Image 1 (cartoon, rainbow, N blue to C red):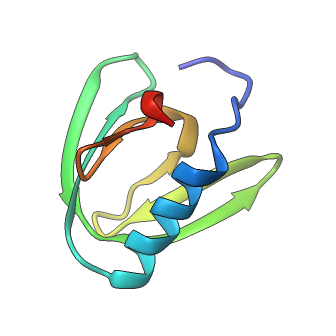
Image 2 (image 1 turned 45 degrees about the vertical axis):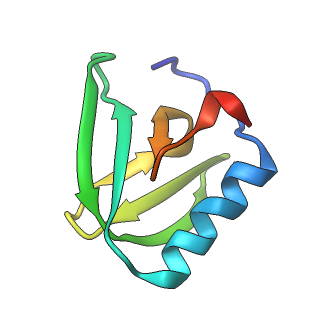
Length: 80
């Protein structure tokens, strides 16, 4: 993960908002601080902006910067 936030596409951001609204468990892949691929099955509880970057929180208690995401419910960020 780079230090500077890389904004994601508005369409993918909208998809995350839909998942947060539905409150259903979904499969999420992301890169951790070491660049390792991680997978969680969790509910997206919030999508928010803070300090010039966008984040989401999971029902696991984790907060992820949106540019860490690789895939959410089989939708790949790189395809947006």
